[in-house]
Amino acid sequence: MAQRDGIKGIVDGDITPLGTGYALSLRLVSADSGNVLTSFRTSVDKPSDLIDAINSLSRKLRGKIGESLKSVNGSPALAQVTTSSLDALRKFTEGSLANRRSDYSRAVVLFREAVAIDSTFTAAWIGLAAAAANGNGFSQSEIDHALSMSYRFRGRLDPTARLLTEARYFNGGPGRDRSRALQLYQRIFATDSSPPLANTIALIYVGIGEFARAESLYTWAIQRDSNFTLAHGNIVGPQFDGGKFAAAESSVALARRRHPGYLTGVLLAAVLRYHKGDLAVYRRALDSLRTAKAPRLRITGGYYLADLDLINGRLRDAERVLAETRTIDAQNGREVPPIVDSIALARNDAWFLEQRDRATKRLDAALAAHPLKTLPVVDRPYFALASAYALAGHPDRARAVLREFESEADTTLRRGRTPDTEVALADIALAENKPKDALAHLARAGGESMDRDRLGKEHESDYARAGFAYDMEQNADSAIASFTKFLSTPALHRIIGPNDPLYLAATYKRLGELYEAKGDAKNAATYYTKFVDLWKNADPELQPKVAEVKKRLARLDTERR
Image (cartoon, rainbow, N blue to C red; front, side, top):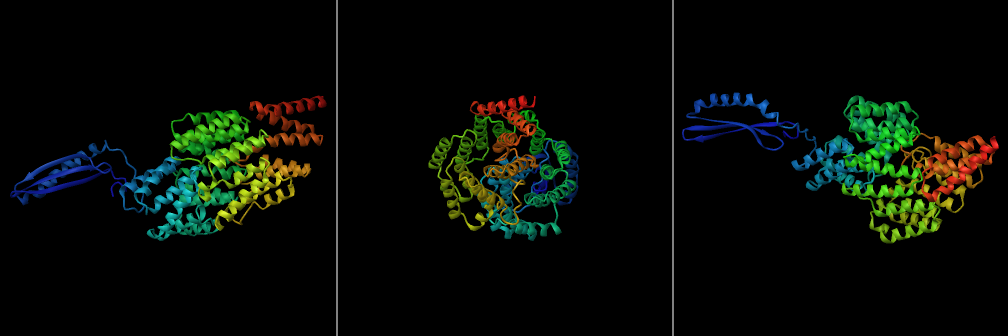
């Protein structure tokens, strides 16, 4: 109980009969270790002397308590959750602290240890799911399992905690029903509001594009508890994506000032430099993260740097950095299936290098070595694989991959992944030279009503895909409009995933060509210059494209003069 409430010491004692008298002892014990910090003993000859002896020992002990406790570290209070194991409770408390500090890999390890000790520990299962989801890269199957276990043992909880568990199950777990989850969260918040709950509801609002509502909840959480680090970082996304750039910068500054060691604050400060066009400053910031002592900083810096290398056309560096980061990640308890990286490398072969045969061979070899059926259905990279086969010029194989997903996935999973299915079908349609079909699939990518309109909000690359579809139709004006929308849509995290890393350079180059064809030399030169600057240090295999654009720039300059 003392550990649970963060109390440093316990006063203990004994009275032992000794002939006609008694032996007395009084001691101060450290709550976290059980070590005796100080003790006093005495004896009395008859019972009538007991009270005076106890008073005397008490005065001596009170005089030593302050001095003795100076050597005791301020152990944090243990979490107010239910488990039959003190060891599991300690693991849970440490895991919760790690999660708040954004050390998600460490948090996952600690929560795993907690549920290994007590498999009915509902709060630890919930913590495991949250840390794995926050960590990006932990398997969805582990998240689903953790939330299923918490849902199974929700009867051990009080009514409010039980509702929270159900909401989590439908929000991020096998229930896959965000609308139902939001209703449950709002019901709880109406009577039992708290900063963590406000943070969770705000994340759902961000997911459906309601940035103002999300920002107001984050603001409330920060005002309610200035030590709640997650809200300090999470508020930046809806502010930036809602076009409130100055507010986003202020929030990052506040997060850095209040919580200097907060990983997300450190990272967001670097990300804002990217959005200001300071790619060199952004790269130096990521290099600094990769040399930090904390593994979480090195891992995050590595993944972001690998994506920046792709943006700059440095495919070899991207592959090297990704491999190094995967090693560090595995050492800290998170392993990504090898086929995921094979798909990414094949995509790079097909998209950047236009080596479709090589991409196809890489995909075939990866599937032979790591069949999809060796992974849980929810972890299988069906959509990335289908898109990679489409880019490699094999839409037939891509469709076969999607048919396998339809046959293997249950109804809730198929419904939840509708947007990803539609985007993969759009890539297939582009590979089949069917731009109208591609545009129709992109229009349907919003999925169920609770999923926000992906186009330009969650996956900015959908605008780029639409641009290539219109270009394929020879509709130059619509292509220019879509490409421009891709570039101008505020999106804090467009620097990762299939957004800027895949499409930024291609968009610059194609916009330059489209404007040149329209006789608009000024805009053509603007986008050609952006492309050359972005790829000036690209790999040798990509330099012919840079040289070609430089010739176009020189010709435009000659014509202008």
